[in-house]
Length: 501
Image 1: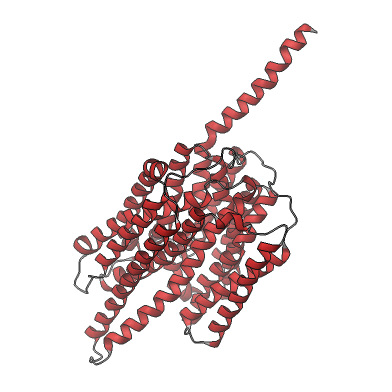
Image 2 (image 1 turned 120 degrees about the vertical axis):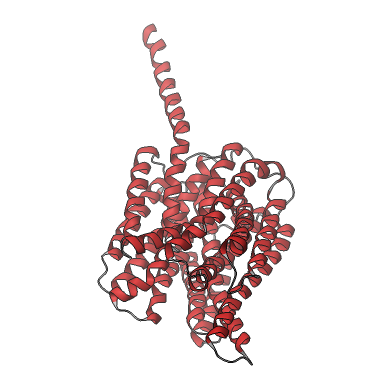
């Protein structure tokens, strides 16, 4: 009996210590898995874009239809993010991550084997559905895995760099795959990411139980999903038609009614889809606003600077991707510095507005581009400044938007971050395309319609967009400086619980 009393407790204690040590030791490998999964989702916003002309030629669809390859993904992804975040809270983040990865991979394979336009659009829509489950699970796992302030800064610095630079990396990867393999490999490449991510998730993540057992608020689900769908569709439709088109205006009207109804429902129901406490915090609200503006500006920059590099400077798709690498490096550097060293000391208030101001400086630099500018003297330094600013903006914003959130709200809080960035991207793409077209038309008024003048008007439209984006960032700097609280972020002990590994 005495022997049993002495022997049993050490076995139980040792097992508990071994599991805790194993989880702690695996946390950086978990970050690698989450980074791969997030990179796959972010890449898909731009990697397919480079391949669209080739895919259009291979599958014989029209230029008008081409837009739907992008829109199908963004509609499904943007409208289902809040639901995806809440589902991950219900079924557990590991389950959500694995289901999202496998579903995204299968949809990518379907797209890669497409024999016609319809098949490709369906595949892109399914990608968006599983992406909406995958993206919130990734950020929720990151939030709950890294709750030590010092390590959290490093982890979110890496995640912020991926979020900010993923679009540029997508251009590089898309150009390389399209040039040296096939447009289909811009979709097949996701299978490699998904296999690595799924294997890592199965081996490294402990199966966590769902943290939210409340009934699903179906009225909230319907108003949020259809409202966000209408909002994203409205901006996508405006891009291909006009802002005054009756379908565009109708979409915005439906979105306004449903999203206002959604907020009213969330404030009155016992089991909200998006608890208002998640976004009511000043720091979190300011960070989400920064993600909205950041997503809007980044999509505009990538789109029009890509046009400039390829159409004006004559860069190939691969060289265009390489041209963005200085920005990626600068962004990664500033994301780490801001999150690891500065955010724990000074908080988000000086960092996010300062990042927007610095990014605006890089954009104002780009407004000086002409048809005779060179990459080394005119584009390269501007990209360095822009990357530094975006790193200071994105990484602290993502960290702040998920800091201190309760464990059972981590999924929906993460979904809010992704929703802000995705909706921002839809707004930016539509708005800046319209402004660019207007700037080009205005430039040609009173000028002879020669090839040289058309080329000048095209570059003028790009620089006009860079100027508008810079002013958007400056306005965002003022708003976020007013919204965000001063001082290092404080959170009650236990608000964030490591449940994801």
